[in-house]
Length: 279
Image (cartoon, rainbow, N blue to C red; front, side):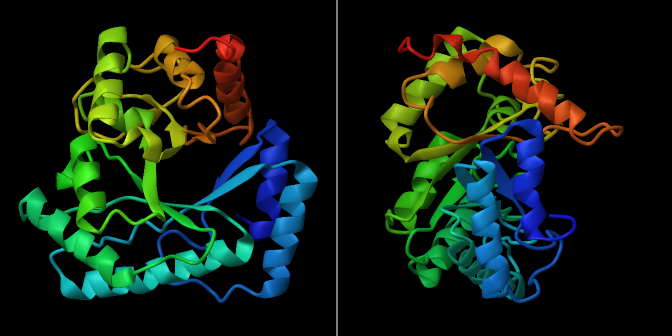
């Protein structure tokens, strides 16, 4: 978003993307400068012009509705309201949020705080869905298992405007061995058993620099990390996922800021030849 939100679709176009994830404001601040309707309209028009079919907003990293500090939870609620309002103005259907961390408290305590906060928040603006993102489990972060995501959604009343975004690197780092067929089937089984499969609305496609079950969140280039290309082929071609929006969050590595994005995107698209085959 350097240079303003209106520049983001053009950057997506330069790498050949048709899905875009943005920060709607500085991601290290609680609140951003008020979004003007003229700027929002210009962003919507630029997205149409560049052929971007889906846009998601990633919430600011400061938001932590599971925090032990009431002041942090309160500020997080106001920040989430700000993000949701921006999404509605920009015509963005998805708002991706990390569930947060319970800090030194047990994860179950953090889960209760988070679900209570979401119940307090209530409904999102019409047309906006909050996507809880699974985590690697680093720093006692919540959401590292499919069962935990299910508990969170149930505890906040199973609202129709709360769903799930899956991150491939986070899954692997949390202990789901999606690099192999057996681990992939285990993941699908858990998603189905907990009723989360139909709630998956988006994927973050990242390879992992750290090993299976490390609980250390380090994204890497597609096919160059611990997951490898076969793992991504399974995600891309699975009947329940192949039509979902998917985004890269891979490193830039300096130089041409678009070079690595193009290579990672090309690597993924090369795996899509079997999309007519259901798996």
